[in-house]
Each structure stands twice: as C-alpha cells, then as structure tokens.
Image 1 (cartoon, rainbow over the protein chains, first blue to last red):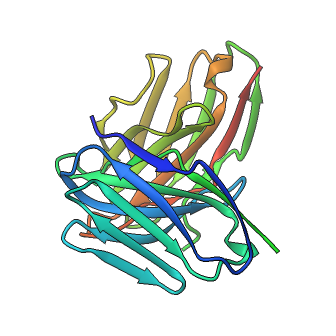
Image 2: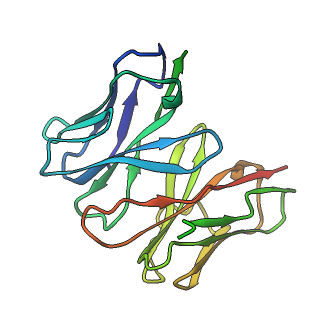
Length: 113
Length: 114
C-alpha cells in the first residue's frame, strides 16, 4: 500500500526566506505527483503536477522536483511571502489505480512579516 | 464555470440522524471523488466514480456510508445513522480523464455530529 509522508509537519519562517518542503512515498510505481495548497476552511488548489517521466516543474516562485527512484519530491518556495502561509499537501497517483490520489499529511507553513 | 459546488457548507446534527452531503462537479468532468479530512487521519479517499459508475469504494469506512451519482451533474454522500466519529470535513472533487489533468476540489462540507 502506498504511503506518503511529509516533513516537516509545520514550519514557521520570516518573510523573504527560501524554503523547501519534503515529500516521500513508499512505492515508486507512480503515474504522477502533485503539490496542492489548502487555505484554512477552504478546498485544495493544485499548484504543480509532475509526470513520472519529468524531473521538475516550475510556476513563478515555486519549483517542484521529483526523484521517482528514491521516492522523493521537494517543493521549493523562493522569497517567501506572508500570502504563502497555508498547508501544502503532496499527492501521488499510482500507475495502476485509475485516477486515485494518495495524500501526505501536509506541511503547515507560516510566513511571518 | 463555477467550480465544484458542495452543499451544505456546514452541518451540525445529532448522533443517529441521517446526513446527506451534495456535490455538483464541473461540467464535462468524467471523474468524481469523495474525500474525508480529519486531523488524525488527514485526507482520505472514500469513493470515486467514472462516468457516474462507482469504481472504487474501498475507502468507505462502513455500511453506514453510501454514495450515489444518478447523473453526470450530481452526487450524494449519505451517512445513516451518523456517529460523533464521523465529524470531519468532506470534500468532493472532479476531473477529466485527460493525461496530466489535476483534480478540482470543492470548498468542503464541515460536519459535526454531536
């Protein structure tokens, strides 16, 4: 059974810092990996999606990398801002599981002004 | 498009009562997913549909939970009878079957069973 782990569970940084969120998964047979953002009391919003054949994806100040063989992904946030404060979730879609996603527990990020 | 619509947004009920959660997916999406989110267990997939047909319900916790999708624009998740441990935020999401497509989440229904 696929298990997804995110470290750290919570992170507090001053504004302007570059930071890295980590995600690991136990079964490397994945179709793709996604990073989502969740604001308090809201649903999830997809930030970046990396196909299993890709190594990274970038969107603005966000960069996600994927090392499928080692079962790891990182989300890099450059020049963090208070508006980046949210919970970030990693999710993997297994090769053989239709369109299902398995989520990590999330990292709760607070960026202080 | 208005995105995925869920109702109600908040529900407070007493143990033993029936609870029905509703979802309208994004028009044209083939897949619909029901998730439950709690502090202890995180985000868990309960069931998902493809073209209105249930594909995998292995995440449904027990027989008290049931889900239907009578047409492409409507789905329900029913809990009968409800218990305090069912208190959680329930999300509905939808997607197309295109390669690389993400899932689009609704705002969730926050359920409290007293």
